Length: 488
Ligand code: NAD
Image (cartoon, rainbow, N blue to C red; front, side, top):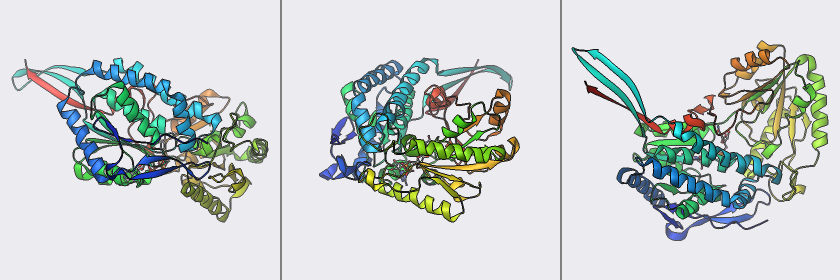
């Protein structure tokens, strides 16, 4: 284990402690022990950050100087490259990423996505010509111009903190907004590094501010309710997302929400590699703590017993090959916190009480360490109306549900409050794509195709959110449309 550098606030171009010097401990998911300290922002700190971002937007050339923005965002990207090791340390020690998962999901994907934003940015249209139109006895020429929306509050979760921070901060900065980043209390360091490196890159004061505190709601609620903030870009749970929408209403805030999921992976009976497709559904990567994971596995009733046998074998083979801090082959570590562990274990009790069959796992594993370890867990004989099939567990818990035919699979997939992702597997590509088109989610992967990448828009239907992040669409979320019309 290591000790992380103190996480400092970054307000008005100054890297600093909280007013009054308050701090809170950053807890390692591996040990349950402090692994670092973070400044504990007070209401006064948050207020100063908002004022600074407002000032920078209103009084500097950040919103209009595209070349300067590209130069500084590119410079910041280069500094992140130099800090890959520190980023890995943060992902491992704050978010509990296992060594075999840390590169891919926690660092590479985020920095590749950053490169995608920079590559796509020149394609962004800043104007659109609507041509002339004659009416009322004269001709009018019409043009739309796209302008940055203003001050952005970016509120982010702990599970893939670098990826989400980059998704919001880089897009908003490129669009010409000024930003206040508020990471989750579990992962302040992954926010603080944005402040440190922005300072080193020479960002003008106030363009990017970073604040965090031990109270998950304080800074977030201030950003959501303050009239000086124009847009909230939030990634997190659906419950908090709803609250943000309600609280943002008073100032008619633009609200962008990336929320939870309960995505269904449908393996059709003609899948070319049925056993492999079923076995690879084990929810183990990052202990299942991903919004986009396929946490419901749908298999044909005609092959249900076979699927159960495959999964039993797959979980047994996975065995105890998880949970070692130093093992580069391990892709699963602990869940993030005591609270999260209790929550996940409560769903194991709920599933058993609902009559589902525990096919694998289900227990806490204190023998793995003093942190928050839960076995890879799988429930079979699940019906889609059970709470374990409807509610986001956000842990290493897979539920397996039988279906009768394609229509039934689509019905089950769609009978969910959520609509984030999904998967379809079949040897018949046309059939798989036809099923994918009927699933009401923001993305669907067919035969394992990657639908999450920095150059693709990502987001949810229904209770999984509003708006799209990443791709050009992800930058456009931070723009307003202004129409200018002149008499010819
Ligand atoms: P969370 O909703 O508890 O917290 C997210 C952020 O909101 C944190 O920064 C937190 O401090 C802040 N917050 C908490 N209460 C607030 C309030 N009242 N007002 C303003 N801000 C507040 O979520 P989490 O536990 O950090 O993350 C897990 C959740 O995030 C899961 O539901 C997961 O599905 C979701 N998630 C979604 C995506 C996506 O792209 N759709 C990506 C990653 C995670």
